[in-house]
Image 1 (tube, helix red, strand yellow):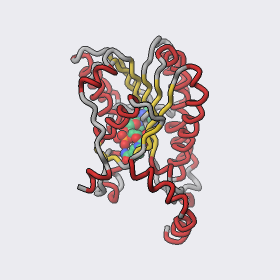
Image 2: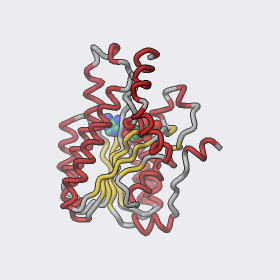
Image 3: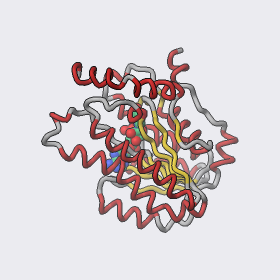
Length: 270
Ligand SMILES: NC(=O)c1ccc[n+]([C@@H]2O[C@H](COP(=O)([O-])OP(=O)(O)OC[C@H]3O[C@@H](n4cnc5c(N)ncnc54)[C@H](OP(=O)(O)O)[C@@H]3O)[C@@H](O)[C@H]2O)c1
C-alpha cells in the first residue's frame, strides 16, 4: 500500500510506445543491467533501433540478439566509459550515425564513503566524475549533430538525493550527479536553438544491484528497475523538463526551509 502511494507507476501502453519509438534510433548507456537493461527491453518491444553501451559484453550481445529477433536494428559497444581514450573512440563511432532520436545517459556508479575515509582515495572522485558527468558531456557533444537532425532528446538518470541538503558520505556521488544536473539545465537552454531538449529524471530509490548492496535500502519500498525504466520513457515522451515523484515536490521546499536543523543532525549524529 505504502509503495503504491509513494511509488506510483507510469506505465505506457505498447501501442503508444510503438507510435513513438518504432523505427527511432535510441542510444542507451548502462544497458547491461538494472534500469538501462529494462529500458532496452521495453524499447525492443516497441521496435526501436538501439545502440547499447556498458562494459558487460555478454549482456549487450544477448540484448542485441533479442532486438534482432524482434526485427529491430541493434548494435553495442562494450566500453568502460571512464576510459578517456576508449570514450574518444566511441564518440568518433557515434558521430557516424546520421540520425539519433533519443540519448538515454543512464550508466552510473554510486559510492558511499565519508570524506575522512577518502583522504587517500582521490580516484573515487575521478571515477564518479568520469562516469556520471564527463561521459554525459562527451556523448552529448558527439551526438549533438544527429540529435539536431531529429530534434531529439537527451534524458539523464539523476538522483532525487541531489534535491535535498547534502548528506554525509555521498560527496563523490552527489557532486558528480549535481554537476550533470547543472550541465543538463545549461545545455537545455543552449541547445534550444538546435531543437534538442535535455531532461533530468530525479530518480528515487530503485531496487537494483547498485542500491541493494545497502541492507537498509534493500528493505525499503522502492521502484523496480522496470518501473524506473517506464519513468524514463514517460519523461522522454511528455513535455516536462524533469521528473521527480510527487512527494519530492512537497518535501524539497520544506527540507530547504528546515535545512539548518537537517545540517545540525548531520553534524552531530553522523
Ligand atoms: N538504483 C537506485 O536506487 C538509483 C536511484 C537514483 C538514481 N539512480 C541512477 O540510475 C542509473 C542506473 O543505475 P542502476 O540502479 O540501474 O544501477 P546498476 O544496476 O548498477 O546498473 C548500472 C549500469 O551502468 C553501467 N556501468 C557502470 N559502470 C560503468 C562504466 N564504468 N562504464 C560503462 N558502463 C558502466 C553498468 O554496466 P556494466 O557494469 O556492464 O558496465 C550497468 O549497466 C545510474 O545513473 C544511477 O546513478 C539509481
